[in-house]
Length: 453
Image (cartoon, rainbow, N blue to C red; front, top):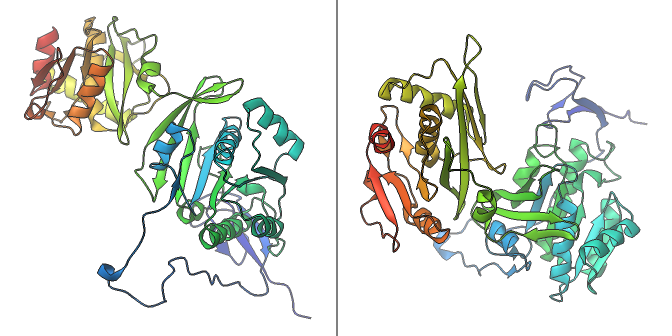
């Protein structure tokens, strides 16, 4: 009788070691190695995803049809997916516990079932009675919606082959296991094997598949990083449990633009779409006070107006504090230094607190000019008009550089009732100004401070 062989697998990155290690040499995680039995024979994936003959082709000779898409009847989700749900795609949805992942997918399942699509909802965490209660609460009781409580991948595959659904939803991938893999459900080996099986199902049968993924304390999807590489689309559900609004963000999409967002409101009857996010983020705006600026930020292909608030106050410490929420901390430090060096603004004895209202994060350079003006406005107690937006990139010498999609930002501001905009001077050429809208182009941050102060 042959001796069983074991290996140690890092539960953070999937690295394999012949012996136990306290620290993973690949990702640096401590106490992450778990002992697993090696399978007797490795399975080979014989699925031909490309559908070709197994030999190279000239790219000009390759023919294809446009991918078939389903509308989910939720316009915000369709935007994030790039125009709808692609047939045979594999989508991973991650988010904190209680954020609304299962609720969203149950509503999507109901909408698709109402379009005569066969939907199979596989719950590995709840019984079918619990799923039925949730469905009743959100009004998702459709004729073609099938539910089952199952964890075994082989039995799930059997149900898929017998039912042949158009859409498959698995909640969650960390609960699914393969009996031939010796490790526990949720381990790196199990998650990788289960995802590979669902990828084969999606591509072979053309079943659009949603996988719900748990997240770690750091906010990343639990399991090996290869999980995100295997799927076609990765969606993150963001928001605080005590906040009514949720943001669905695409961080990977093989069938559309990345960094698209969809905004939803959590209600007692499920998630409702927010068709005008700018109106939500500007509700209760206090930009009649110093330090408050409205910024048109790009999120994928759409413009969202958000409020930036800054508080500058005399410090009580030897080293002044700097704090940023929704903006890169290093960006705040850099632009503070530009104000001190190029404008002569004395901030070395001032605490600076910067926040983007509504829990939104902005990582594009067009917010630089708004950050500079917010700091200056709060420091010198100057109010920026409530009907004005400000955007532009700021260089280390204080020059205001051009940004992209200026026309789109200005149009969105005009639609929301704003009357003025301060933009980079180099962006004025070719800009069509909406009726009654004033655009001011500036070259240096000193020009902006002179305009207000």
